[in-house]
Image (cartoon, rainbow, N blue to C red; front, side, top):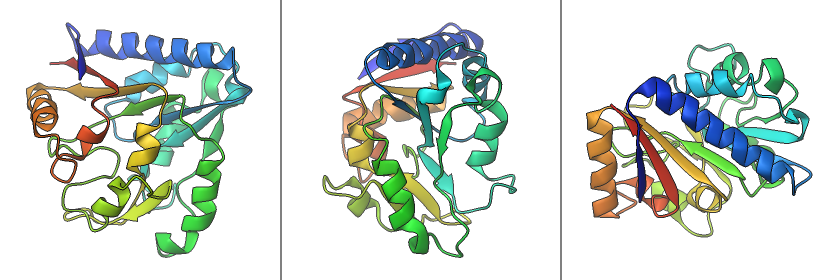
Length: 224
């Protein structure tokens, strides 16, 4: 595991945004289109703000969430809503967004169509992940109903996931998709999450610490 430590969160966010932008530009020099995968939640918001101001050929960039709650975009719990407000705006407005939600009561009814859209933009060129204090990443939660399936090498690109304490179903990229990313960054802040990522690295048990499936390939970016 490669760990980058920053003096404060502001510097972390700006420096990581610059790294991601540089990697996307480099990939665009060699590919017709590239794929950026990002987490939801409020922590990466400043990175999205910085990226949305970057000049590049965003029309050739596919943007996909690492996971989504099965709620419409109008919901305050929608990760898509956050992405549209803070990333897919300004210079980044022309980027192509790949949705992980469709208007069906249960996610299973839409999995085939959504998975096909994701498969068409793989592999991920630049992957940004978050991590919870429980060592989950994306919606790969310890104790989730289909975690073992989602960790398997032959898992489909996208799977629905239900976990204790989650009020609605989740949709998540699976382990082989995350492991197949060409560049992987994990964003964490605070002492609790640093302790958690170090514990995950030492455990190396994806069922207990799902984040461990990518730590061998990832750079972890941390500030207090």
